[in-house]
Image 1 (cartoon, rainbow, N blue to C red):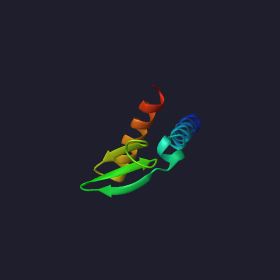
Image 2 (tube, rainbow, N blue to C red; image 1 turned 135 degrees about the horizontal axis):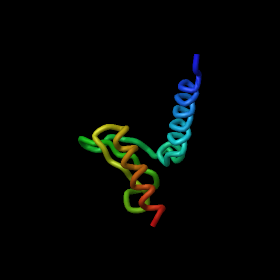
Image 3 (cartoon, rainbow, N blue to C red; image 1 turned 90 degrees about the vertical axis):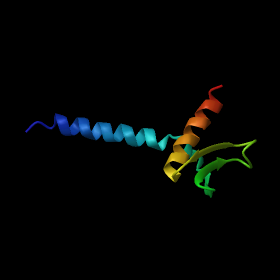
Image 4 (cartoon, rainbow, N blue to C red; image 1 turned 180 degrees about the vertical axis):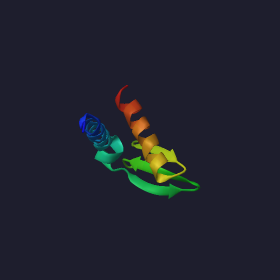
Amino acid sequence: MDDSHNQRLMLQEFLITQYEQQRPSVLLRPKLYPDGNTWCALYGEDLQAGVAGFGETPKLAMIDFDKNYNERTLK
């Protein structure tokens, strides 16, 4: 039996896990709270001083937070 396929799958899962653990939303753990009909992920004191992400679900808010954080820090 050829284990190379299983090894590639394990490597892929490992790389995905490594990527996920390095996301800003995982490392910084922004506050997550409902904001009207959406969710807000906020890192910092307020929207002006901090970084925020918004989405229809907590997951989408965290994805938006990651995008906004990366855009802000790469400028």
